[in-house]
Length: 135
Image 1 (tube, rainbow, N blue to C red):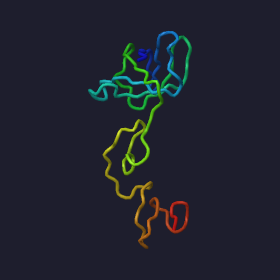
Image 2 (image 1 turned 60 degrees about the vertical axis):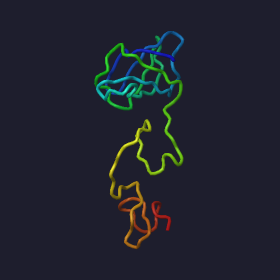
Image 3 (image 1 turned 135 degrees about the vertical axis):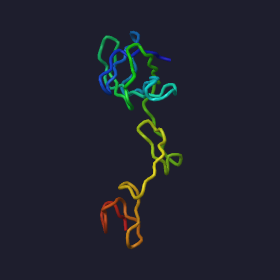
Image 4 (image 1 turned 30 degrees about the horizontal axis):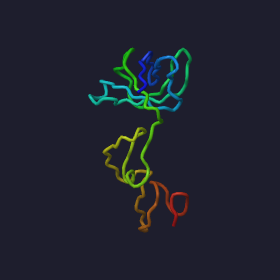
């Protein structure tokens, strides 16, 4: 596995240094263990956004970077961030890195809400014929 180290943290931007000739591809997912999130290993996913030169890549974090320090190890997954699709994802709320959330929702705009006529209307505030109602 290709291992780099945190070189700089500026908000959600994390610059990572790798050995010469071992830069991860743009869009690759990298893992960092961030103790400020929780005790789970590889709990922070960052995505490579740019090759900076001098064996450095610029990444964008998908969660908080509080707690990161220079020199922390960074693992290259060798592949982009992946999210499941199909039956295993139906009815689930997933974040950008496919972690499941427990969410209690009552008629959120992206769900199908009952209308007074009994037909399903997509989204709150969409009534009658339109993009949200296929009836």
